Image (cartoon, rainbow, N blue to C red; front, side, top):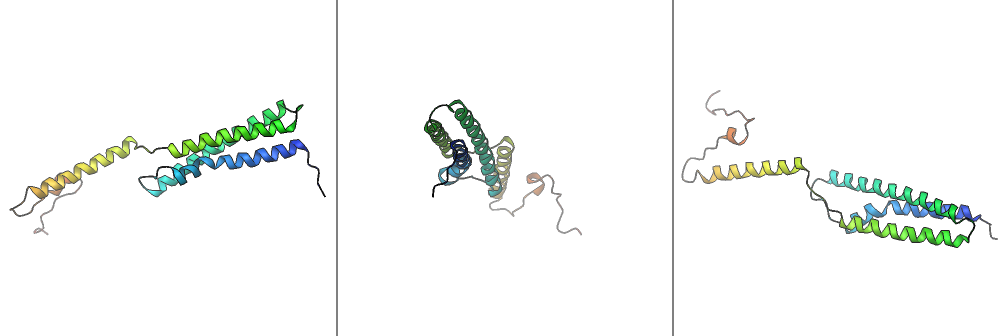
Length: 156
């Protein structure tokens, strides 16, 4: 027994399913084939959530444009509106897949400054270690970390 389904309801349901699948294309393509995050995993998750929000916005645009096309083509055959939905979905899915694969991470100014500061501290430690060869090893901790107060070990 075949249940008759009105064409506009079927088209809206199909468009909704396509929009839901379109929302996940960007984060999933980046997760599967994109660049791995170089730092903390918590930030990587935040980047994926941001990509999912972008995908959700594109899905809403897809649904609105598809509904407008369905309204514009309401006097013609329903296959044209469905074909338009499928073509638009294919184009947007391709663009989002490319964007997910080619997305790159870049340092913010603060993170780059922190890394440079750590490199400077490491070079100070290295130079302090190499300058005391043949001598009793003494390192002025206050020159490496100004927040550290130097104390003589012999004084209580």
